[in-house]
Length: 440
Image: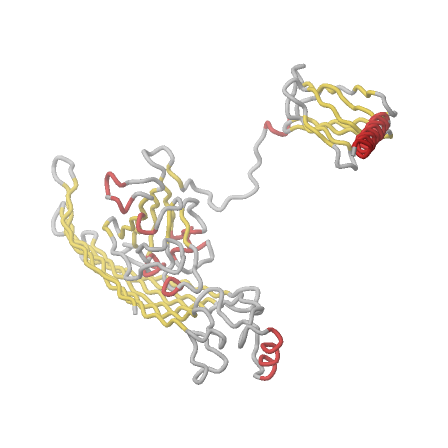
């Protein structure tokens, strides 16, 4: 027993000595590159990048501007760089066991003394940052230049705080895009039409979509050809408007021009060849009376073909037995390609909006806004495969089936009232808004 223990101890000591000798020899074959990096004023430069060109060896200078690298003997190109500083390169030769001292005095670069703007989507100031809260004012021209046909997608391309993502395999949310500001819920974004509160949709967002469990407002039910500008209040306004304005406020201002006729159209498709989009918008205005009265009407027709990015199905179809399942797939000529519809849904949309106003006196005016919108949508759910016996009656659907979701969405609304100005300078308004949405 004692002999065995002694042998084990001697063997351990021997291995340790060999390891120490090998380590010492390896260290003796390396060299050290070190130095100090200083800025143009002679002060230590912390965080400067120090690398050996052509290798993966590198480090950064510490708070005192010092750096150190352990390298194999040889010839190297030492590169020192820092933001706003002229990069320096130096050829060095290091020998085994030696220390190579290399310090650098860096020079400032003049490139950061100027700002170059390489592009801009607008030549006019769009955001008001000097007001109590930040506000974006987006004109109809800015909306058209986005190349989109739906108001939610138009705003999505312009307003940085706004987000509206199209959903897929999401029940009715495939056809009504939930809109958010600053990542908060759709029910926390207040939508106004000409400064009057707009109603919510009849759809409850489910299936893990954006804003799950909430009800938002359908901005796409407003014809894009009727929009004069959109004002986005990018901060909470609950103290003024209520809890549904915690995220912010979107005010859609419609056209009130009293003359002219305009037509705009759009056509496009995806590079993959699907998702074709057609849009036709019209706007016409005429004068009422001689004291600034107007009547303006807009119409909008939109159609969006579906897109599909599903790919190939790789799981079991008929049975959980892999070999038997492959035989049944071949026997029934079942295609594993594009079993589901993953992408944009198909949508037909048509809407009309009318605006009118005329004077009832020197300081009193009557106004009215009325609109109607109809949308038909077609989407799909999850494919029901034959092996899912709790969801498929194989006697009726031997190869399973893909359930389709057909939606009919109707909107109608009217706003009417009178407004005026008192002698003391106060503005007053007496109006009534009525509207609703149905989803089937």
